[in-house]
Length: 147
Image 1 (cartoon, rainbow, N blue to C red):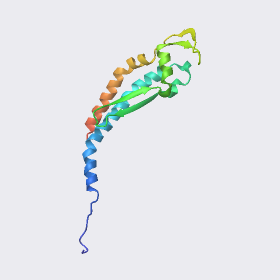
Image 2: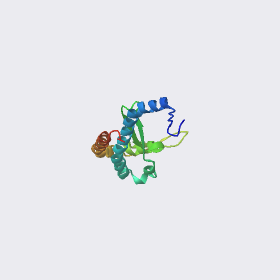
Image 3: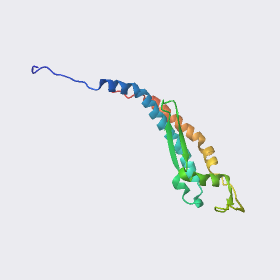
Image 4: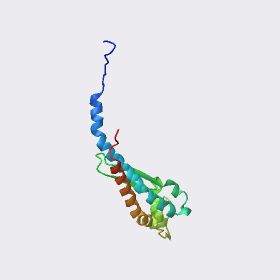
């Protein structure tokens, strides 16, 4: 090689091509995840405001779980109280009082329902849809970055 020659060696071209072929799907999946996260915010705020405080630490367990379809065709967001979700259900729908094992005797007392999850969902539904729409629209407008 002379002083004016140069060499470029490219390794991993197959991996690069494979990565590029996945780029559109990855962008779509990212856009869905971002939009679902945006959509969850109004619902979480409504639940935070409505979660009864006298039920202990229920509000501390409020969580979201975002799942995007592996093919990038959609997704879902689950909003709830994790392992304490059964307590939220008992408060939401009411329940009867039952003693402990082994007899589990009916104590004859009923705890009245205190709906808070369904009203929170109804209150925040429109704002959640709008947040999802704005986020998806923004992602589409951003498109693929130009370099």
